[in-house]
Amino acid sequence: MPRPHGFTYEQRGDGTVVITHLGRAAGSLRGSRAEKFLTEVESGDSQLVMARWTGAYKHGNERTAREHPRNRR
Image 1: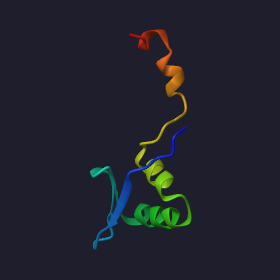
Image 2 (image 1 turned 45 degrees about the vertical axis):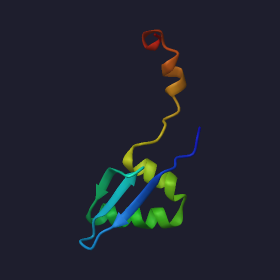
Image 3 (image 1 turned 90 degrees about the vertical axis):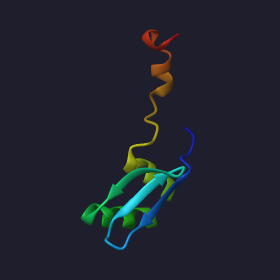
């Protein structure tokens, strides 16, 4: 599975954290969720953490789904 890339985050003055992917907004977090995100992103692989928090990561079943008869063209 390829590693996620292209994620950045910006912490704003009002406590909001905005996550972007390749320059486009992917999610925003406020309050306790923003605090939890910031502690997690500082302690782990930041790209993987941001991909997981936005839901923009591969689940591992894409290849299987691509081979399903209804998805063939």
